[in-house]
Image (cartoon, rainbow over all chains, first blue to last red; front, side, top):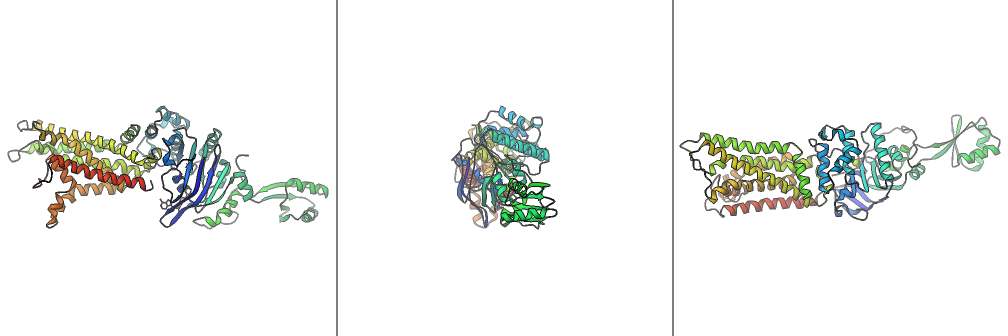
Length: 314
Length: 243
Ligand SMILES: Nc1ncnc2c1ncn2[C@@H]1O[C@H](COP(=O)(O)OP(=O)(O)OP(=O)(O)O)[C@@H](O)[C@H]1O
Ligand SMILES: [Mg+2]
């Protein structure tokens, strides 16, 4: 379990992380979501004891990272896939890390095998593609077979195959009972990967909840109804006090679910041609929530949002 | 022990230490050969003459030592280092030990290589190591190289950028210490306390200081003291600041 209590980081005048408190539960994939510059990487560096908090603390199973003995056995992390010496081979990179925590040398070959880099283990890491570098970083994170794993934007720049591989991999790690904390600035990606969500904006906590709750709270749940007797249906619905909106040949009802609308239609003898639940777009919801806290605003046209997604863990 | 092994793997798994090491040994031996080979009646070749160009190797070894840590900052592997070993002082001391040991070995190779090549080229000269002072002048290079590496590593940790650290080290050791003598009146007095001047007094090369404050070994201790102070400052700084 990772616990942040009042975590704060100031760089000169910039308040990168502002009194942030959250917990990352065991055995689940927890997404760490926030727009660019929200302070995700900074928070992760503080969890790993690389940056010293200006205030508050981050604890891993109740201990500060810098108090851990042979920390790679407890916490594995991939913060940036480029943090390797380009002229060092993948195997040598893992070998020194393994040695520093007294991990057996054969563990290096094991993790290379897990991430599928065995064939290029002797090649210089500088020549690796982004996907390969990312895998090398994951191999390094897995070296000590840790219970807690941190990944900072692991799918950034990967192709769909790479993204799918990482997503499945995270699920596998959580299914093995590990704590997985993974950051992203894309809610659509996190909705598929994470079961829990810690959402931040401008260094502040916006929400911590299950992904499902976050999505259903954040998005407006509506039902689309089509009927040849639209007028009669509108009157019947109007009496219940729900809000109704016309959209072309159909009604968009919010505040009543499909079952209730169906029963109401049966009672009033109305024919239905369509009765379908609608989900608001996740990205829309995310932007609504973090809108005030986005550091670098851009002009985004309303409605330019990706298709609806179903949260993970369903 | 495992930290030393980790640092050894790190050091020898990239190419630059190999090239630096080769240059550090070949350059001074080559120039010694030129110097001794051309010496005739005018220059009397003695044991310390064979060490006259060793400082070239010492400079290259300082570059090697600085690079050992500045490349870690350059590629952010220092973060992986501190992530694997949150006790930063222990991690950096392990690196210092490994780099200093390599520097010591290179120093002995330079010293005995230069001495050996001189013997080959001038069999007539009296180059036998038949006194404690002779041994100090030759075998002592290993100590000087190791301590110079410690100093360079400390500067590397403090400066973090390769170009800055290397420029600072080379300009300082090759130019500033000599040019400081140009300062009116105080110049000479400052010069005699300069660390690399002290190292030269230990070996017995370079400018002789009139009325030396210490004997040769005292100068070595003085040089070691300065190197360790720089290293200590670097360790404290690295422990405090964000990685
Ligand atoms: N070392 C540093 N020195 C000064 N400012 C910093 C430093 N690191 C981060 N910041 C600032 O802190 C804020 C948070 O940055 P951080 O990298 O943690 O955001 P992020 O959520 O990881 O963003 P992204 O999604 O772009 O990776 C930014 O305003 C950034 O400019
Ligand atoms: Mg980031």
